[in-house]
Amino acid sequence: MPARHRVSLWLVAAALLATIVATAFAVGKYPVSPSDLLRALAGRLAGTDSGLPQAVETVIWNIRLPRIAAGLLVGAVLAAAGAAYQGMFRNPLVSPDILGVSTGAGLGASLGIFLSLPLAAVQGLAFVGGLAAVGIVYQIASLVRRHDPVLVLVLAGVAISALLGAGISLIKILSDPYAQLASITFWLLGGLNAVTCSELAATAPAMLAGLVPMALLRWRMNLLSLADEEASALGIDVVRLRLILVTAATLSTAATVSLAGIVGWIGLVVPHIARLLVGPDFSRLLPASLLLGAGFLVITDTLARTVVSMELPLGILTALVGAPFFLFLLARGGKTA
Image 1 (tube, one colour):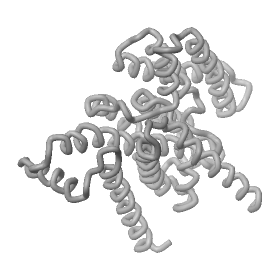
Image 2 (image 1 turned 90 degrees about the vertical axis):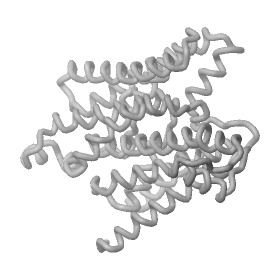
Image 3 (image 1 turned 45 degrees about the horizontal axis):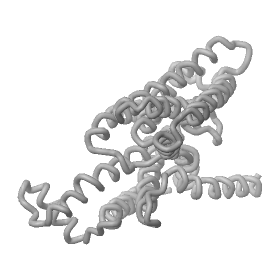
Image 4 (image 1 turned 90 degrees about the horizontal axis):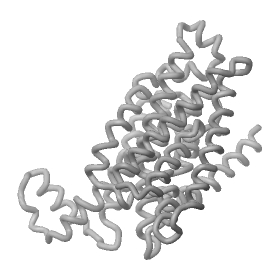
């Protein structure tokens, strides 16, 4: 594709994302007109009074801004992590939770809710649980040396995820069905309704810290699609590069789960869509995944709070979109094989 067309494509994608964000600010149980939104933005940028009612200001800056910003960041991070995992493991079925990040974080959060800890402690346990799960998986993989290291890593992740999932089920059985079970279930399905600016500010550095290595090493990611021997012959320390990228993707994923719960399918499906649009080159795949993931989660969150009178968990909507699309990809792959 000519460079001019690529620039035009990125500009169109950025414009679409801006339209999605503006729509998310405007719609909801308390609609905000475009003129009010522009007045509020102009007043905030100029540092003057916008003249809008306090209720409108509260809806824009205290309710919708944190969840839209969280949707942009969480969606972008999950999609980028998914693209990185699929490239590293040369497997299109890999997603950020393959190494047990999501279930480890889910177990930590469920334990926090079961112990009636404050929200910050619940999120902290989720973050620690996600990192601990990956640490255990790595430890197991390092002890098993007779098989392919990547295969052992993935299988260990599947096994640890199943074990941690059993722990979540046990906590749900033991929890109070009237006070705790609903909270645990809703958290495990993901949601942005409780996100505040302070919580977003606390977790954003961890998410960005994971994104930075992926962005800086995006040119070398393409070499991981080669056999390890070929990549090493080109001067790449495959083990070190893969370790850095896995750590970065895991850190950012654990941070997203600690903020928004388990939001499935984005890390699996969005990289496939991005790959269809811009190809497998990771230097273009990463920014495309970032844009698509951010837009996808903001759209999903907007639907979750507007389509029915009650707030729907994000995991339900992402599954409704992700599962049929993934089956479509499987059918499409079968026809082209």
